[in-house]
Image (cartoon, rainbow, N blue to C red; front, side):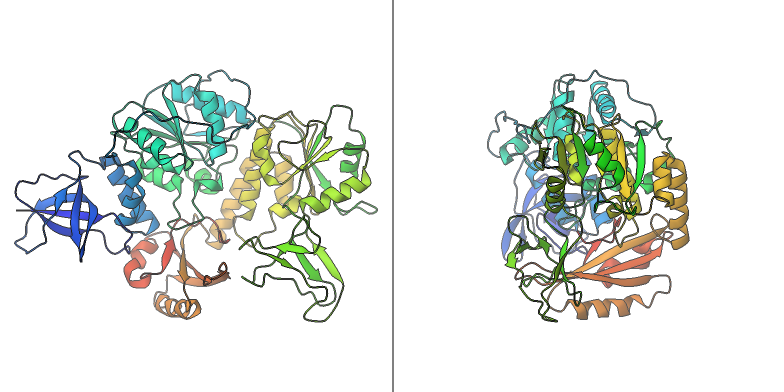
Length: 596
């Protein structure tokens, strides 16, 4: 009699890896087989993970075999084990994420793939270029990087490009499909029918060139593919909206021996590990001081000259930090800031009505009071620079110039105004006369250790989208080393200094950090109990982070930052089942302390 280790296809706590069942006589199962098993008083589906000899114990038998072929390939089983170890979740949770790739019981006909972004501007065709031979393709021109990726895909079979966003993947697929016949694009926007058809094609080796988001890792490859991580620095490679918070970069690094990444400015961890060489600087970079006397608010003398000197058929791109009219509404008499009455999150002013506020956390709208509830004052102040407020100011100052805040912008507009996300549209749009970051300090003014790293990467991404367009940055502190090194394109000095500061403060990558989450009515009590348990270890430190307010009808989420030495690591010091029992959840791939 044989014993099968079966992983049920349902969510389980991390300490439950599999359950043991006996294999009935005449039933042939193998690792990766789909079976039906009894669990308590019901029959559920499960995946056979391993088969061994019976240890003379009375076990419940497997009910039946549901598919004659193996539905979970060796690649998928290795992927599930890697994710379970990295993300501190059970194998059953990860196997459930692979269930959409199982063979369908109904015949799946050829699906029709449509554009994920209908009507999106597309760049002109690029020739296939020979990519570099290093493991880091540090580029200064996004169009050149697309040519490298196209050449790499066309050079051999069984190759996959992991992109951070659906928009990036669609643009790359639109360009590379001219050179690769069987190229397919996979994302969360595919219908179940399309996804089943694509998984079937990959399983039988009919599709060997893929572009996709993190979802592409879960396809049933018959042999280990070659991966490229496109825009390695992009934060969208990590799923932040739900748990488990999977990150494509450490997962691929664990699964493959050779990892190739493209980036306009790699992450600090990637630079510390591989020490790539930066590309030669392109385009002009200028710093502008905002604290000069007699200047228009948020409009420096240089920006005023750029707008006044605009010629016919020229346009200027201005980038502001956020949408709406203001970041917050603050009482001038006592400093009280209006908060959402539903989730207590600070409100931002909506653009539709000057007295209507919308909560960015729960999405509810509320009227802000005419008088302050704390001091009964009536003097209100709009705090922070936002898109619509700055647009009103520009229209008053230059009424003769047409301004556009929509994307794609109006062809007749002379001033284009957008948030940080407009860099994604520069590749297929007419090149502006100049790009002006209206408030460069907003990139750095975040209570997080990785704020400077994200700011450096965004500036590099923006410059790579339009490498020949002058880039201006307005700041109140142009003498800061960050801005001086950026102006001189001194990547090596900035990276080395940031690595030194991280080592001095024992921050990642020089320490191991987790963030533990607890959502429930007694979150503060559970947080205190966990801190008491962690104080037993002198090598481990813990610091509570601000609560994440819950949406309407939901409990807040308590967070605890746990830090420890990189060697041997927190996994060796803190058994997860003992210190973080369910419903505690862990983010073991920490790259930021800010709430998602």
